[in-house]
Length: 592
Image (spheres, rainbow, N blue to C red):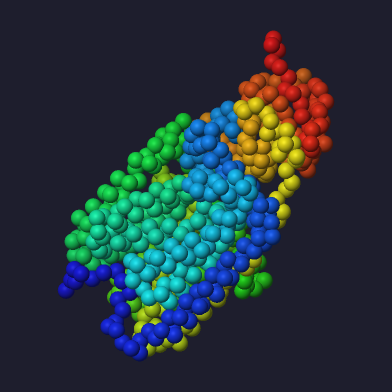
């Protein structure tokens, strides 16, 4: 028999004065608050100097984000498009929509950037990421799933302090700003589950999706996948319910797209069809994935870990920012037990299917087992080459795993607390949250900015073309921070970004560098002095002309002396010293 009015709720039993006592609910909230305290404290290494410290070791990505956090409001204030710039990678430029650029946070937090600089803004986002994830998950568990305060708080804390969120703070802030992930899934459930006055659900669905597309598209993609998995699971479980809800769902989705498309259509057109569109991924497609053992192997990112576990996790592909799968044995066991015991409940079915599918996808196209890549293919290989998923990494699905695991934890705790097992509910909450408590995230001082960039460089005529050394590449992304501190007064070749090569394939820093850029990059990498002859000098003049370079600025670098010598030989004149940098005026082209 079908039940058309069945909803995707926690399906609580009738009110019982013994079931779910208030003290249990209050203790669950306390546990969640304590867990969140550990989560917030994970960023405490930034608090002593939030405008001058960065999370380590993935500092290049931090400089990438600070550049965009400063540049977006700067471009808007100058009447320029925030979606395209030539301030780096001159003269080709960079497409903001094809990079992780935090466009919306950059605009919303412009007052913070104006007062304290983009590094302060980035660290404010690092601080806010976990509370925002907690708030988003709490709303989704309280409203669409209609869970009481205690279980919802425990589930929300589980998601917010998960390694999927915390480890992403190491250079992948767009993945940590995932509070909208459970919200979007929750809104999509409301779109087919219940009627809302005047299409309010569709309106909010469009607005939240719009905010997320300008914060981080990968999270939006995962939200869409998660919502689809829930809908398909519900359709199998309650086909009549979903059939009857189809008109309501279509109406809400129509309103959502009506809100979303007028604002997002043009930026997305630039991303997929603009002059700097690209396809594929610059990363090895079969490399970044979750190890099969990663779900139960602690990383150094959690407080309770053994040295043996850390050594094992360090063999997993990628850095800690890609190690997102860890749930811990208690949560894994609880999820399995909840599925077995609650398999007839639609909420459990949907969360379990979402967890299983996202976990399998996170394993990648070729399975990793204990740090060794096997030849065993994974289902992700089916999605790997599709237009949208080709740009994503399998390991990132750990974020969706964490959402569904948190939902199953909340459902289990609620069921236990309302079935006259309050101590079991409290024990389950503690046992599952304890292994996830995050350790303090390592931080380092940001490198000093030469005084020239905070002084004389700000007096340069707007649009000055400068070749800044060391040449801006991923390993020298701090040069982009120098440019931001100079208020973007000059344009420069190079940078740390994604752009197309000659074949339109996505590459870090775009296509192959000009010969002079490659020569300089080799010097700053090795410190070895190349042979400079007239052919090299002629090539340098041609490349400087291509870049329309007016001046060359050399700042501090490991191989500063070698760079200084090679530039002097290429240009033919010694530099002038200004406030911690060396400056050469670019030679004029022959005949001018």
